[in-house]
Amino acid sequence: MYASVLSLGTKLERALKGKKGYVHVIQTSGYNDGKTTGATVRISSQDTKLKEGDGAYALVGRTGNVMEVQNDSSRVAEVVVFDLE
Image (cartoon, rainbow, N blue to C red; front, side, top):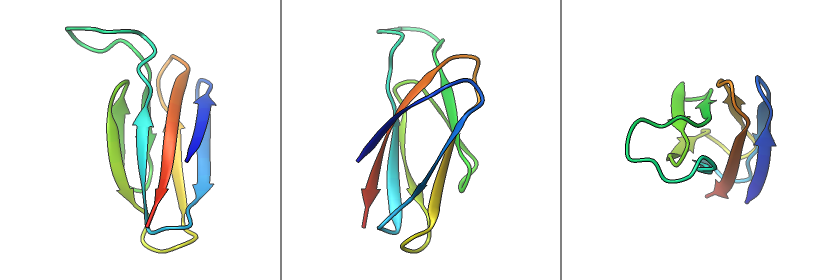
């Protein structure tokens, strides 16, 4: 498990020991019934966009491949990355 705070426009590059990972974007803006207003990140290997509170599995293919998570919003994003087999 790895936690990181991504400033505006920054990215996290993490080599994984397993073949897939799980990324969760921490919801720091609090409970919201409507449209999310918090940070968004992109998982480059899958071109997947996640908003605050979202999580997704990401396949990196083989051990040692790098998972790249980029903050593409105008807010600071807090993410947790899990390295899975």
